[in-house]
Image (tube, rainbow, N blue to C red; front, side, top):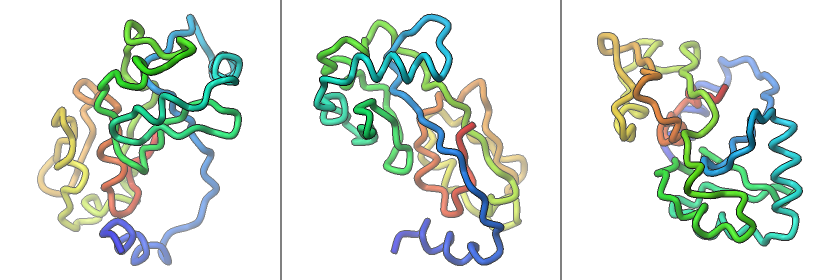
Length: 168
């Protein structure tokens, strides 16, 4: 049992169960001018339909999963993105291109009601893997994400023992 599972199981009886809407996070190498979520789904579905998920096999961190509609999704529960370009270089249909590299389109936030540190338990699980030092602590018990430093890589998400780091 991993540390995350242990702490999650200890705190689970005290949490109210809520239905979470799944957030689909796309790799950071596509471009669709003025796109909405619906546009992105349509774009990816059309272009990825005949692909065998090559981008996911070349992902160094193994965080790209292929959905039922054959579109790529980043699954931060598996790890974080290093922005290594491998998925874009491997993309045979040209959906992902290195020249369109940008930060992952999502916002990473700390749910202070779920966070152990905000509940006065010393925990630096999210801070340690942060490559940009974007997680700062006010005192020892109040982690915050500095949005000016955060690249939305997601490395902090997998390691949080209480799943307090969420995507918006």
